[in-house]
Length: 371
Image 1: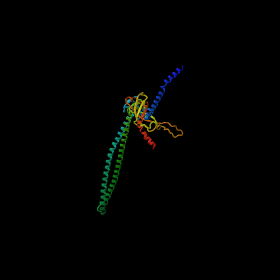
Image 2: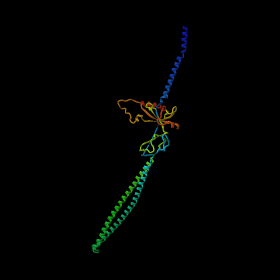
Image 3: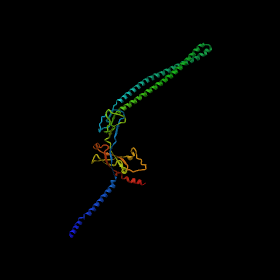
Image 4: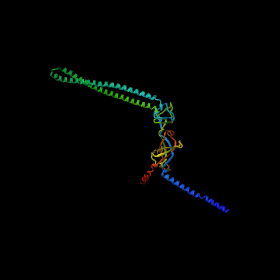
């Protein structure tokens, strides 16, 4: 029995000889794997920044009414793909066509008044010329009468001519002087009339200009009764219906651009130190399981999300809890037509940004920090 036990013990000890080398080998493998993982992390892993707080976005355009009126037609459908310039909504143009007709009638009235004024202006100029001619005639008559009075005065004094002849000449001179005063007054009145008619002509031209401006505004309003797509994309959130009364500024539909899809990823503030535009990005969209998309960093928002909120946080209070802030990063997606058709705004995504291209800046940053 004793020998059996001894022999059995030797068998047990011999069967456990492999355990110690195996444990030692496993430990060495773990140490080697850990060392490799640490060195890989130091060389690469620490520069890969990832987040699952990312969403597909697009700069959507809201289509709103510029004018009020009844909707005449909505020739597009929900989710329809359309090109830029496609007719979206037509508002009843009757009121605006009436305004155009009214403005054109005002233009014709102003132009007719202007033509009448121009004719009156020509007549007034002729009146000024006539009054000027009459004044010259009267002045000539007065000069002749003065000469006759001067010639007869010594003759009457010498008795060669009767005094009655001199009296008649003086009367004629006084009459000629009165005619000169009347002619001057008529010339002044004619000139004032010319100025007045000229001012009326300017008023008619101004009225015509105002009517033309009103017609241009009415034509612009008429053009705005036909709302067209400002860019290519897909129609969404259509609220306009034929026969509906809309008001200026009322939201009628949304255009989602299909060619301008991007990812907005919200990274922690501790992750963006080496993040730069142009760095490569790996994207996984939840809706596209098993598919990895490529992209690059397009831009980094110059502030945290909280900084651009409606009510920014005010930390200068008695109680303060430090919270890691998020910085929005816009990522351009490299995709073909097939992927573009599947991506819609609001989809969740996970992104990884490779910041190794900026790791050379670490030395410069540390050197500047030591200064």
